[in-house]
Length: 199
Image (cartoon, rainbow, N blue to C red; front, side):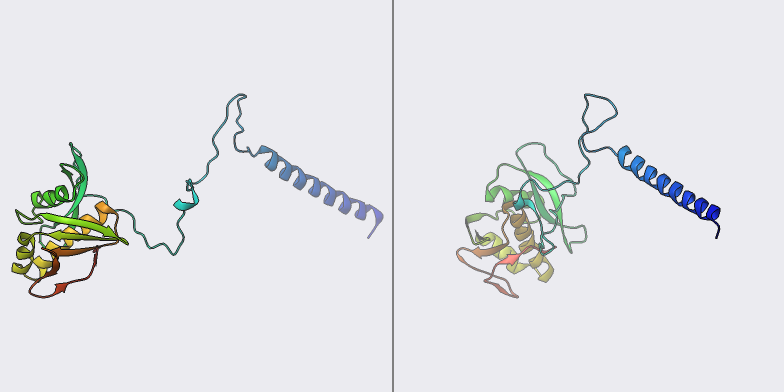
């Protein structure tokens, strides 16, 4: 290779390197940093994904919490807006429905379930307590009689309309239902254990 060819090759390599360096410099200097704008005196908020405000709000992949259930037809027209679980049109599964309750009491939730047709007229909460994520609801005999007189599907709907509604409203993990202080009994089972909400 002649000296002249070597000089041309070196010159071409230098030109390519300068062009690459200019492109990189132009790209880097053309990028706006967060808060930088084209107009002086204005700032722009950086585009960042929504991050939790505190470490307590962070979720890890091990978290098994599901998104809160959204009611089918919220109805916040006064009183306390609550979500109750009612049987679907076929009477086979429960559907969350938004409705109003007189207040945030346990009986107001039961009354909202009665108004929605999920529980029988006269069903009442006699007492309630919460310990270790378990809400114990002591219901009256009207509720117990309704559970005992319904078939398997009706029994399940009566029980889980109450359980699902109270798990969501009270933020507990499960509900233990008693009747007049004794475990809830149906013709099929004795419910002497806490029940978790169904999905």
